[in-house]
Length: 134
Image 1 (cartoon, helix red, strand yellow):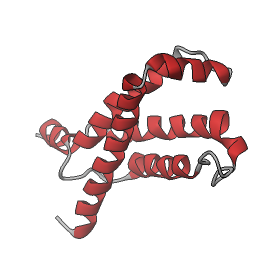
Image 2: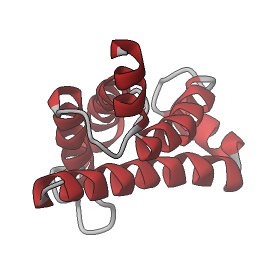
Image 3: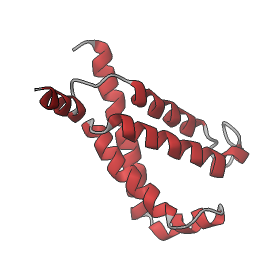
Image 4: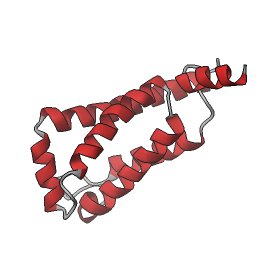
């Protein structure tokens, strides 16, 4: 393995952890608060459950390197949704009180990266692709 592959692994694990943690916080902090927030944005409140579960499970899958391309695409879609439903009026770097959508843009780009990135040697995707080839 070269340095690039190690760094890609590091970024994938950190990216996965960040989404896992976001999902966990949604449940620990009271998912009903997130449901109410979604309702206030004009979104179906039940979507909060779906997003939290996707973040939690998808984050774990990304850490393991399983379904990386699909999870990257789903996370990218979620970030586009977050920008256009909640963050756009705040501006890129926020309004001084609330954060803008700079983090969502970084996550969006990382999601897109993992759609196209080569399989990591340290991933379950790689292990399963080898077993299919055999």
